[in-house]
Structures are given as structure tokens and as C-alpha cells.
Image 1 (cartoon, rainbow, N blue to C red):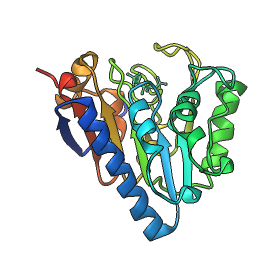
Image 2: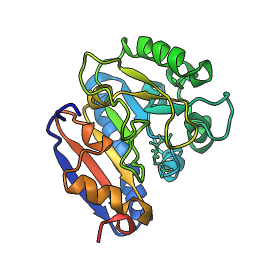
Image 3: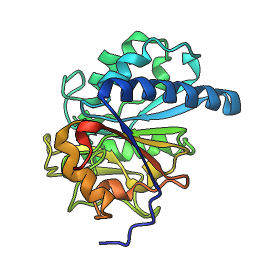
Image 4: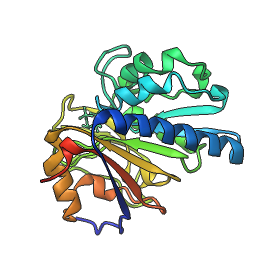
Length: 234
Ligand code: 6PG
């Protein structure tokens, strides 16, 4: 395994999911306001899976200049557009269909083209994008994040592609597309959102310094790991 760069971690425990997502909504809103003040735009990468749904639903009510927001995805499942299991479907239903972000500024990964072609096309899109202002990520029970899975290529060095085609993923569907670890790390802020007792083992491994995929996300200013009490290792 390639030597992982050093990861700076800040652990933030919350008593319950309600308080975690209320605080996360405030944090995203604050980061957006800062980005708009400093650069006039806010480039955010969305996490997939189910965990962030509550955050996305709360973001509907945020007072902000939606016209300055640009939405990207950390990963996507190779399923037809409109398939309810797509990460972009959940984000649209929970949030993006309800706010006035211009559609040309919402960039779903074209995973319906197949992993290899979609990874190539999304990497071309990201060549026009500098560091992300915010990357939101989840954590799988095996320590995966986005679609970077144990035993697979995580794309650590900048010489690797910015976007990876993922085959034989252990979490269905087997064909996926994922931003690489180095591209997810090219960010001003990275927040992991982790809830549920099923994530305890992965968090314990992470805290013990084991080389899980989440450890490969190494932005210059470190990562913030927001954890609901149920998910906290004993
Ligand atoms: C996916 C996600 C994946 C997810 C974790 C956690 O496509 O499945 O990108 O990385 O964030 O598996 O999933 P839950 O939030 O559903 O537990």
C-alpha cells in the first residue's frame, strides 16, 4: 500500500442526529456565506448514501444567494438517470429540486455512461474547478468514503486520475464512479458526517490510525469528523 500522507483529524461528537444536522446546516450556511464574500461563488461536493439526507432537507430553508452555488458529487452509482438509488436522485429530491441553484451549476456525475466514460468526462469537467470550498463525505462500515473501498485504488497521488472508475465495489451497485482521494483532498474544508452504531467499528479503526480509505482524505487544513453519539466507539 502506498504510504498515506498525514491526516489532521478533528473529532466532533454530538448527542444525537438532530443536533448534528442542525449544526451541520449552520456550518454549511456559514461556509457558503464566507465563500460568497471572499470569492463570489461556493463550490461544494455532496456526499452520497443516506446519512446526509437530513442535512439536505434542512438546507432547503437556508437564506442565501443560490445563484452563486455550484454542486458536485463525490461519487455516483452506475445506474440510469432518475434511478432512486442514485446519489444525485436523493440530493435532488431532498434539496436541489426545491432551491434556485441554476441547473447548469449542478453537476451530477454522468454515471449512466458507464464507469470508465463517466470518470473521464467528469475529470474533464473538474479541470475547470480549483479547490472545492467544501467537501461533504460519509463513512461506510468498512471504512470506505465516496466510492473508495478497501483493496481498491484510492487515487492518492496527484499523478492519478482526478476521477476513478470503480469496478466490483463491495457495496452495490458494483460499478461506480468516484472522485479520487487527492481530488477530494483539494478542498478548503472537508466534513465527514457519521451516524449510527453500524459505523462504530470503522470509526474505531480510523481513530486507531488503521489505513481505511477515509484516512486517505488529507486536505491541507485537515478534516472535521462529525459523529452522532450512537456511532461513537465504546
Ligand atoms: C454511496 C456513498 C457512500 C456512503 C457510505 C455511507 O454511494 O454509497 O457515497 O460512500 O457515503 O457508504 O452510506 P450511508 O450514509 O447510507 O450509511
